[in-house]
Image (cartoon, rainbow, N blue to C red; front, top):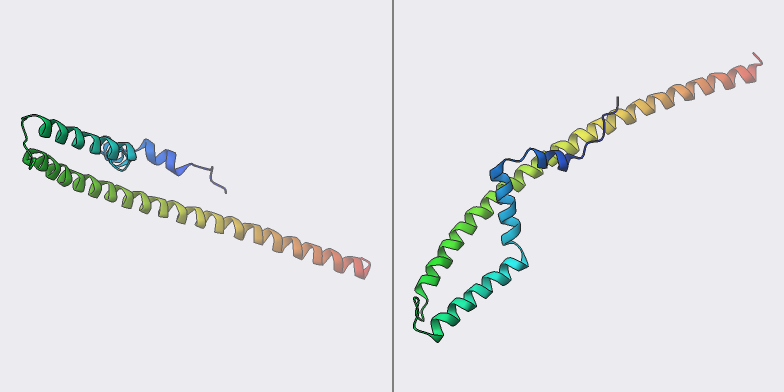
Length: 133
């Protein structure tokens, strides 16, 4: 029996929790060039404002360093969440591949059995033909 074809990825995406979706979005967002550009832009604007006028965070930018440290800690946690999710996806995909391979093996064995029976029938017909039966 053949199983209907199922797009594993679509089924997997339907079953994601809200937290898993959020982790994927954050990972994809923080790992993008727009994020890097926006991040650098904000830092440049922060530095320019605080250098050009007497502002809330003078030159050593202690407040900016605090924010960057907090962001680094948060990003580390988000990356670990994303890595854990990717491990789960890889394990599920490996299981799906295994099940697909087992089903394909079973179907190939069925086809080989059909082929063997056909060969036996052809051999039998050929023997009858040569004997004149």
